Image 1 (cartoon, rainbow, N blue to C red):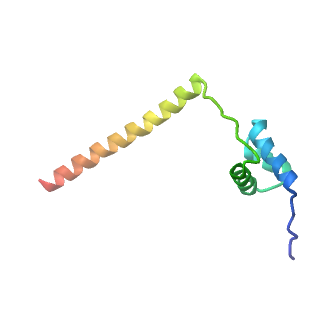
Image 2 (image 1 turned 90 degrees about the horizontal axis):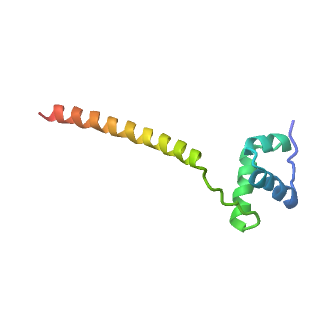
Length: 96
């Protein structure tokens, strides 16, 4: 049994993307509410932003968000450093 493809008007697509951009709700939640696939909504957003139809407002990071982001980044850098130390020690031991 073949499913019929749903066609969405440009106005529907623009409003759906605006709900994500300006509404402050997660894309997946908006997609569920509108009964569309998240990938589809993401693609509409990408195309409309590229066309300049919808603009994403600049969002500034709060100091708490910045500190959280920097802590995560620092943890990744520490893990990479520790791995490189172990790798250097392994290869130095192997060549001697």
